[in-house]
Length: 237
Image (tube, rainbow, N blue to C red; front, side, top):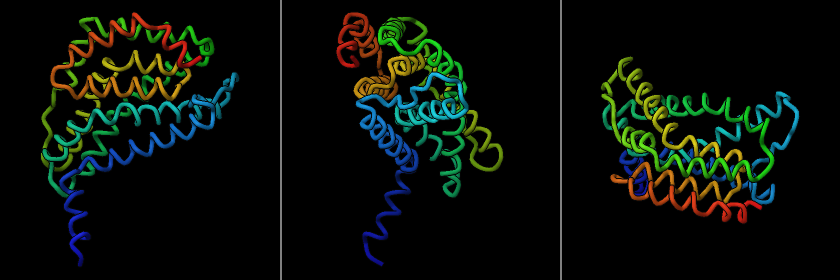
């Protein structure tokens, strides 16, 4: 057996988050492909009727957006979960955590997509939502939510208690992530998912979540977002 063959599994064992990162990469590939096909906007379901096909299409896009933009910031939590449980069940624990995390975002997606279907269209609505998200960056609620995102919950080592604790921690992380990133995600949806804005907002939210002291970035983003809404109009217009 070659050295490379042995080394590959060893690297994967030391990086248990690789499955989530692979899902993130796949989500971005799907997102970019759809955006390029629609001239820079991934909102390919521009259907005005409330058909089941349109609802499923919008729901799938929301799920892809959550995976692409929100899952990267969970890597520290995922590593915590992986190393807190038995080695043989690490991927199971990660899957349960991710399921709980994404489930919270799916719940948020139902009203968001409904509102987007009703009022979506004019760019100024999305810009207004983005300005509101920037204003939210300056609030104590955002600061509290951001700090809660850095907290952990106890993870049991094995068995059903481990399953329950991983799922509960995922829901906990998803809940506070929605409080932290929800307004910006809503704004991206109302803007029509432009690729450049989506990538920029995703990078900012990722930095806020992983930095140990994100307050300076949070305030900077808030002030810039309020001062330059016209730049967004130029980008998406």
